[in-house]
Image (cartoon, rainbow, N blue to C red):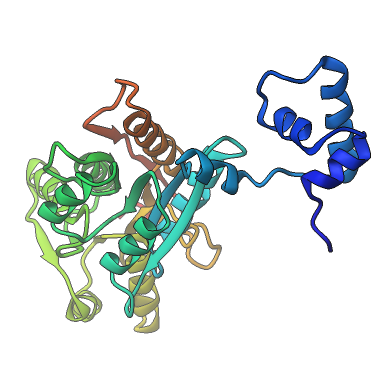
Length: 318
């Protein structure tokens, strides 16, 4: 299908190409009658200006670069929310993934080569010093990880409160032995461990923290009352293993995940989880990126979003 050009619009409207350019750029220089004629011709031909070329000519890309994890289900929810937030407005999104064979640094370099105006990093693993250095080149917004650097904007869920909420749900159901299958050095894991420890201790219970492949085997061999998993993916895998070994969920063990990703809502999973508000996280992230790019004076160092408990079929009273 041949692309409609500005010359085609000029020919249809019976005006010069220069006049079409004036109308499309929205600058003074065209009479109301000529402006209407050009816009009508553009609509009839379904003409759309090349926004990328126009932005490059102005020295702007109007692009937010996003680095995401290929194998992290909640990142898919965040990406969908980011696209919904940006919508048809002036900004566009450029995506670069990180994965087992592609590092986060490679993804960042690819976005910088595209002249993005800000970087949105979903749960990055880069050291704080590297993030600070990166923020000296381009505004950086980190999602879903606490970062101790005034140079970087942070938008995250209150992970400590999320873990406390999960423990309160489980103790309210009468569970006394609650294991935390934690996330090691993953973003948010330290805050979730702290919240878990505090809540379990406050309830007069003994904290039990496990991680790694051997942890699932230990839980299946000596089932506790309940398990708080680091994320929904981990929780779903644990449920599968427990059921395969004849341990009923939630009959023998209640399981709680984290994120409220699409995995948790699957009928075969039906996972009780502590939800992260993807829409709110995305909205705040775009707002903070815009505030830094446009220097509006409204930038904030950190935005913390409250979690919510989503109760499904993987937990029940003891």
